[in-house]
Length: 457
Image (tube, rainbow, N blue to C red; front, side, top):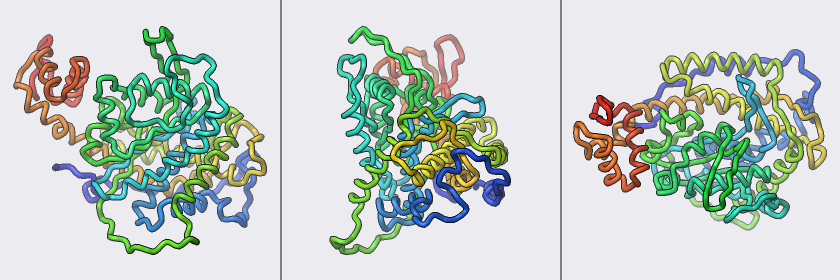
């Protein structure tokens, strides 16, 4: 394949504004919940520091990582944490309330270490037991799923809607994970798939509706939420993160090479801390964090100083996106807000680590401080670089992705003939073949030159 997601092929992200922001201090800190358990002095217990906590847990979950894998594990933990605050809200620039849910795509060749993202999968076990033991659906419906924080990637559109519906009723996290992006792609192209619209709406907390005749009930989800963690190869990525549909812009990205070296085998003794031990410990900690914030509707707000830092950062990123993405730069606006979401997650973890009770009872408006923002910036330059890198890859990729269809189609064809040929090649229904025709059109690989008539570009 001609196009690669390697570092040397991608635009480089600048970090001048981040560095300047990191050197700023809050001259007039507000006396709010942001100061709960916080002081100038470093905490005696290093795990009262969010970064020490994430560092220690990531090292225990996946020992002996190289630097790229270490970043992956921490990002995966942040995405998993983003799912367990269903009652927390953060307003965007339009002052619309959003959850902290994050979507992360991990892209790399086989044996690149992307499978380390698997480490977060067991961390929801105790939340699942707690929710299922205490929640009963008020208005049951046929084949309703149990509340479950982890949603399988191999799912139908209707079943995904049912999961999101039940989880919203239960105030249960919704976290979709697939260690192979091809699992999602197979489901999307299946006879009952095609749930990209649900992913896009749930990522943005946009209302969803479903009407089925099987149980003659119309159901609505007022405020859906979904965090996602997908890992896959470059070929799989090409079919998943479409630019024109808006799927691409909802994700953060982490790309990986295949530069790791063979690690020496070490004999494990009974005294050694094993990854499964850390998983069990973190599963209890996830339940503790979830339970700590579950009973209140909480709104996060960046304080005055953090707002200034965030706006300066936004302007710098906007300029880079103008240079690298040009007319598509607005696709990066969600990226900018996702960085603020990460700061919000770190703020919640900071307060939880310094808790004096098992349930949060403080003010319902909580502040994101400059410390939270500065801790976030350690992730940002690489996230930005990879976001632009995957954009460049996807911008060039459509012809490679759709080449089998283009080869099968004549130079000029009717909509009916084109859909018939697409259905044969892709082995999909006539309805789904129309979606593929629209993708070819939106990717500017074909054009409409008369009513119902198309030709290759």
